[in-house]
Length: 385
Ligand SMILES: *Cc1c(COP(=O)(O)O)cnc(C)c1O
Image (tube, rainbow, N blue to C red; front, top):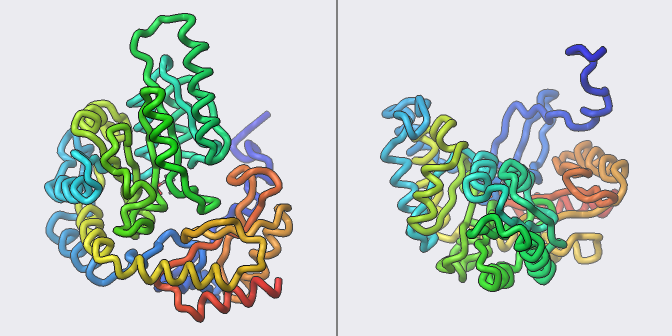
């Protein structure tokens, strides 16, 4: 009989243990046993998580307004700093409106059920982030996954789903939604945003683009992989503050009508404690840095340096801060990660189901605050594996 001590088989937790960092300082992680590792796993692409000005402003707000937001925004958890950041983000991303959420996971799990119901049709890229997939499932919409980056497959799936459901003709207004990451979190490649938007046009659908890893990083102005298409009326753009912004929280931008509707309907907004004001303050300061573009430039140089040094390695084709080296078997990837750790580098092995079967890999993330020496030392270690 199951009881609390034998519910899970022991293998279930195999390998997925915390690193137990006791300190993170710049790119150096100190672990509980005192070893120091150069961190190549962080999403802090610009080094803003420990930027002095960001911390300074957030600390002032922490002193002024306290630690917590004390309730949902619908009750008394709202704060002018949250609105302030929403206005800044909407203006920066050329959108009418913005809504701030507790995290990307909360955003995506609330967004899809607010937009789609069992009469809706959703198609999503095969490799979308888990939060989007969970959101789609919660929405109860009919959904299909299209082949990774394959916009014509998205097109044909929408056509076939539409024709099947038109037989019943129960619902006059059947919503259609295309869902994709901008930069894909495990491969580092980018969606064909223009292609997806033209499929959206053709099918009278909207495109939900989650550019968590692109906003703040990619594009001439750091606005992500949809930078040149931000004003497209079918685009609903999501991002997180946990990556380039170096903090915590998430946002969605779109039309006034859309964001207003989401404000009324998103259960993960209504039934969850509001983001604390100090987080919004920190994110505003982080946005100032992102607008300057200096850190992006440094990051871009570091990425190029890494790519140049790894020409002959089994590297996934990615021009972004996310760089994968595929080993295939779980064991080989785990051994590579362990060997790098013994040499002073933290590079996690990512295994199925997070990535497809037989594609276990090292996932390397590059940051603006890595030195050239950090990167060349890692590449030397990789070549000696
Ligand atoms: C990291 C990530 C999320 C989750 O964001 P959090 O703010 O960390 O919860 C959602 N979508 C994508 C594509 C991500 O990479």
